[in-house]
Length: 309
Length: 279
Image: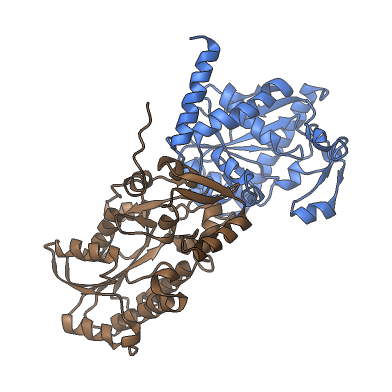
């Protein structure tokens, strides 16, 4: 059960749906929706302190994160939202006497991607120094603040959800946007393993974490995997195999032409792929995503191209 | 339907599955459809028509459940690993698929890395080995690593160091039997009589072999010699009677590692006599 839930990033696509799910839950007394923090307007950071005190918030769901510099108006603004925003929020939580539970939306990107890693990451895999992408680095830092808070305030339950790339109508990450065009440049000689999480399942996981105590770190991803080439073929898209350096140049050109570039920080992912183990959350919640990685991809990015059987 | 029509139909069905992405890949990247239709036939051709391979002791490989096959490594290129894979797939009554643990170099290289994953192999690390064994897979490991596969011809059939015994810890922790395996015949496929260190360093390779035919004959020199092989499996070493905690006991691990190494070396000597000349 939860009383008053504060959801940050409530005007972002995932946040909006989490707010709706929590409002529809009779066990939740009230949902306070906080839009993306306007950092320049509130440099003091007292905003969250005031909201938490005034609304008597006992549960905080932190989803106010930007996945790519392009979405925030540059890297500086992105970092401001992701890192400074989380710092302020968690500082406010630490000062508050009422907050008893915090759910942090994070990403499986904190594991990075490399040739020398195990095929499947569990939550026990150390993440220190692994993440290379901008959002991944921010997420690792947010997780660190959350752990610091947990160490200082043992009475607050901290749950960290490492979500795989979320796909859903109107919801995207740099990876899912990279996969959208009819022809996609892919690195020659590599076929990375990918995982997706359907937005419905992401919302369900966050919802469950917000209404009961489930301390710890949990990976969340649709069961199973797709390789990059398999995903593109399933959706009837073309593959343009480009040698690695070419991919970088092509990405730059595409960006200059106003097109989507391959997720620049994510070239390591496109070489080595990333798969996480999800047994911990399934054990803890007695719940599993409704959509497998394959089903999530097909439902959102797939095109039902029927071929004669 | 005649034979070739059936084959053509199967090939077309395969191609259609590939074009539409209608196949399943496991979390390690294993793509059985691709492995069975593309990779295995190539390995099988070498196995059946190039080398002369006999298999011995298949009854020691369990029909179901996890087990760790521990073999000697030789031959400059890891063809012994691929041939052991074919032997178990084609000769074992349960047609077991051997999931190999490979060096990280494989996964750093384009093409080779993803083909290796599609073939069902993964990085040699305790996490992946444990996960496969717990899932009931048959896992193959070559503890000598590059020291074994890249040793000079003069040291043939002499086992190198068996690493730190990580494979023993993994088997004990997963409570699966260790099946010692001796492979005779791979030592002579590329007799390595020299090593161009500077060239190896340039390409970031562990060694750059010189054989009687390579690099002198160019690509032709890369054709392995058609040797006679015996792949022999020995009686399994049980670990389910051991305390799983002993996986962290360096003394237990070291002595079991030495035991397994000795089993493989003895078996190797025996099979080498049995085989006789390599050609």
